[in-house]
Length: 144
Image 1 (cartoon, rainbow, N blue to C red):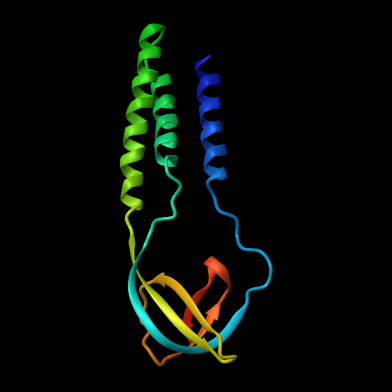
Image 2 (cartoon, rainbow, N blue to C red; image 1 turned 90 degrees about the vertical axis):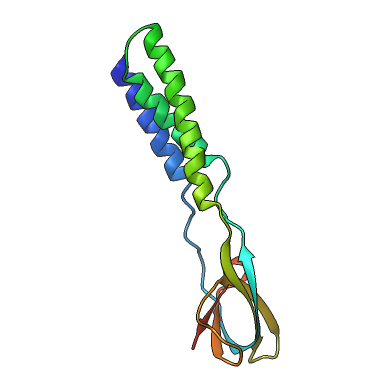
């Protein structure tokens, strides 16, 4: 019985871990060239899914609790393990949810279009020739 429970918990944890992975971008990457006109300092909000740390921590705690005791003691250990794991997982996730220092970069492309890209702070400067790789939220400005 214990082996079945721990196998089920491990399988569930692995499935949740794989579901949290983000897929790689598909299709061709668009690259445009231009010159930086303006850079503004900003903060970038975290993009981590809220609650994932608590769920994974709770499942881990549940699995550890299942290994302790028998009968009512085992049930209590599982509940306490799940609660403790959820609290611990949530605290760990808070560390990763802090905003990151970033830059809002305005680039005038060679076709005359003004493009704004927000990304983590780098070593770019106004007047620098750059490439804009990608499009939408996946766009990044890199030096030429």
